[in-house]
Each structure stands twice: as C-alpha cells, then as structure tokens.
Image 1 (cartoon, rainbow, N blue to C red):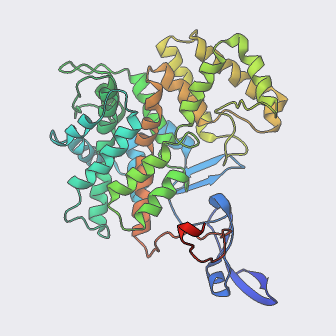
Image 2: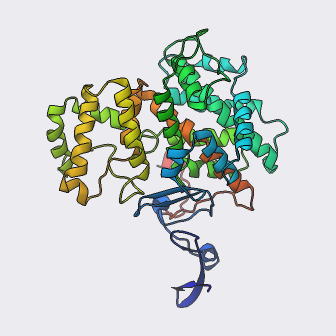
Image 3: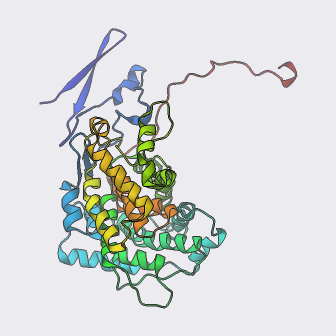
Amino acid sequence: MKHTVQMIIDGQTIDLPVLEATQGLDVVDVRSLISQGVYTFDPGFLSTAACDSAITYIDGDAGILTYRGYPIEQLAEHSEHLEVCYLLLHGELPTAEELATFKRGINDRMPIDEHFAHIFDGFTAKSHPMSMLCAAVAGLAAQFHEGLDIYNPEHRTESAMQLIAKIPTLAAMSYRKSIDAPFIAPDPNLGYAENFLNMCFGSQGQPANVSPTLAKALDKIFILHADHEQNASTSTVRLAGSTEANPYAAIAAGIAALWGPSHGGANEAVLEMLNEIGDIRHVADFVNKAKDKNDPFKLMGFGHRVYKNFDPRATVMQSSCHEVLKEQGVEDEPLLAVATALEKIAREETYFIERKLYPNIDFYSGITLKAMGIPTPMYTVLFTLGRMPGWIAHWSEMLSVPFKIGRPRQLYRGPTQRDYQDISQR
C-alpha cells in the first residue's frame, strides 16, 4: 500500500509520497516542495535522507549494525578485513577462490612508486600524519586520472583495489616520516594488518616479526570501522563525488572530514582525556566534574550520537582490547588503569546507565591502540585505513544509478538588497 503525508501550505494541501525502507524508518519524499516555493530546514541533516543505499544499516536504539545485512558481531568473529572489503564492494561474501584472487590483487597493488614517494619530502617529522595521508591520497589522482571513466564499473573496481591496497602503505609511510625513519616496502607474504604493522614498526631488511594477537586485533578494528552509513566523512565523499571528481580527490575530502575531533579524532580525544585524569586516584573527581553541568570537562568515549542503547562495535572490541592488554602485559600501565576504572563506573553507576552513556568504539579502540604502542597522532590514520572500503562502496553505489550533484539549501537571514556606497561616503 502506497502511503502519503499531507502538508498544507497557504491553504493548499500537498501530498508527499512516503518511501518505504526494507529496515528502519520510512522517508517522506519532499523533493516536490521546491515547486511550492519552500524548503525544509534541518541543520546537521539529522532528519534528512540525502540518498538511498543498500550498504549499511544502523538501528541506534536497538544497538544493531549490519554490512549488507550481516551483523557486525558475526563478521568480526568469523571474517577478516579483506573479506569484509569484498562484501562492501560487491554486495556478497566471496567464495574461497574469489577471496584468494581479491587478496592477490590487493597485494600486487600495495607498493608505492619510488618517484611518487617523494611527496613526503614536502613534510617534516613534526607534520601530523593525517595531513600527510590526505595529501598523498589526493596526489594519487595524478597517477590514476588519464583514461579513468568513473561510469565504467570496471574502472571503479580498479580504483577501489588501488585505494584499499595503497592506503596501508601510505599510512605507514606517514608514520615512518613522523619518526624520521626509512620507509619499509610491503611484504606480499604478509596479511593486510600484518603488513601495516610491519611497515610501521619493522626494521628495513629484516624479516617481519608481527604478533598474531596484535595483527588480529588490528584487523578487527578495521572491520568494525569499515563503514557506518551516512556519517560526516562518508557524506563528504558522496558530496565531492557528486561533482564527478576524481575518486582519489573525493576520498581525500573524506579523509579531511574524518580528521575532526568530533569524528575520527574521537579516539585521540579519549587518550587526551586519560592523560588529563592521569592517575586512578583522580577518577572519582573527574567523574564528578563530568556530572557538573557548569564544568566544561567531558568524558570522551562514552555514549554515541547514533547508538542510544549500546555501541555493538564496542561490545566486540571490549574482548579484543583485553586480549591485547594481556598480550602486551600492560595491565598495570597508569592510563590503562584509569580507563579500566572508568569503564567499570560507566557500566555500574546509575548516572551513566540512565543516560545510556556506555563505552563506545572510540573508548576501546583508543585503549587498544595505546596498548599496542601506536602513537596517538596515528589513531585517526588507522580509522582512515579501516573506513576506506565503506567510502569507496558509497562512492561507487552513487555512480551506479542516476544522481544529482549535491546542493544543500539555506535559510537566508542576512541583509536585504542595498546599494553600494562609495568609500568616501561611509
């Protein structure tokens, strides 16, 4: 049955069709309102669907996240990141042969051209890794632009393969530049997360020695961050892509959006908060500060804009986090002791339970990366690495059907028209 919503504008009744979702909320189609001389007003687009998509579904109230219909808990337990990449890009889980071919294709594309590597010469060791990564990904457009047809599915697939393959290499290069160390080439015999860890922390010319526990934990972080529906960075990729921009440029725009502390930088903010608290003896005082409406201090890593019950990614990440802590033998590390105390309070105190301020994915990923010895400025870089397949899947999905260039409207509240006055008369 087709549903409609009626609006009355200046005494005239307008019928607006309701578009039905396979899951979640239905959507009122307001596109015809412009012909009536009005727009909708929705700052932050909190009640606006800018597209339709078949990639990721979130039910924040129920704590549900699925990729192509598969629950995140099942994928994190049974799958691996490259398999999830294939799923997001192609819509179905691969066969064993398809996955093997996909992995070979990624490994073959991981190396960076020696000449292109000089892009990092323009940065110093003090440069933030995200600034280097954003520039490097945008720079790939110069290598992959000639002859690229974004409306050709095969060309889009090749762009996806190149980006997924090269992002760990470029991310590791940004880290090595930040510590003024020589770059380490990818090893085709290593897995995706293993390769990244070896390119970051290995020794040039030496065999790789990566902990399986750490590689598995990092791979799980990549899976949990692979996509998250129409968030700020994904929407940025779609908006930039709607101009028919080169995909590497569109992805670079997404990286810039992700860098913000309210988005991808949230796990960095968790570590900054733990550093501010400093010692387990101060936890109670800072919790009281967080409860005080007149105190600007905020507990980072608790609650979520979308999840009003619990963050299903955090539930998965919790066990992985504790495995890493045990592996690294850092249970007594002061900041991690602070984190453990905060976690206990958030899960037991009525104040947090009533407000549904559960530890989120940023809380656990921040602690995990800290325990792995990864420096704080690299946290958002790892988020970028994980989110890459989701961005590309949304970009490709948009281009596979008719679309319009993004053009949000505004509610103008500035001066009405006035005449220019010569400077001598002002």
